[in-house]
Length: 113
Image (cartoon, rainbow, N blue to C red; front, side, top):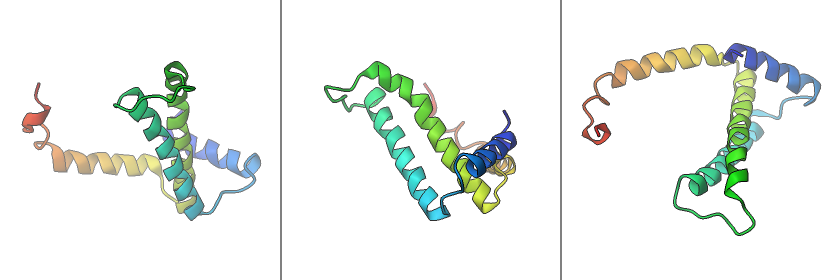
């Protein structure tokens, strides 16, 4: 599925099953909540934080894609609400990063192994 298709599918889902979009501020708060849930998993799976006794590493690994998808879903909602074409936005962002960083990362000693 393309990004544009994802934006259309999410819009259809919101307007049928979801009834309507939350307002932009609520969706921004929901996005932060979802990012926090991903951060919690990442800290335990790849960082130094340990799991609580009832938590299982295997189920956390299974939850990782779902948490990322939750973030993408809410981001798409915000894009739809604010009239942002994420395909075009990503293209422009990559062009900007390419112009800005074309030599920067290649000359970064910290990135050389």
